[in-house]
Image (cartoon, rainbow, N blue to C red):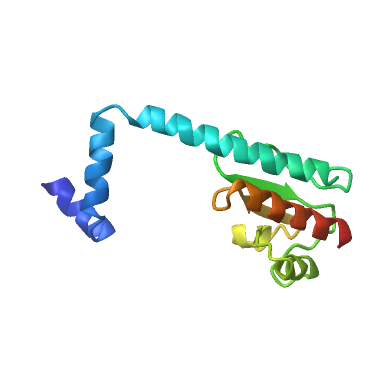
Length: 143
């Protein structure tokens, strides 16, 4: 009861229905298989984004990144001197092309680095992910 009281003060009432579902999933041992399916799904999406970035010639243009071993996020480092901040020409061109990314400077309290971008594979279905990645590559090749 003390734990529940503390929890209630911390999250102001997480949805009980969702908690009941999670409890059943865990009790019935279904979580591991669900997690495996999700991991496979997002690993595939990461491979798709990785392939588009490589095929677009970004490595040859001085961009660097690692294929994530889990999760949804790619951390790209643009060429030395690149400015990918929110008010940069690069960011504005991406927005004009319908592509959003998180500028690297927004990820750190120092406001540095300016040459990095965070891309996510989470929200878009595969076909739209490819389209967005191709647009990002096109801007990166031009700017």
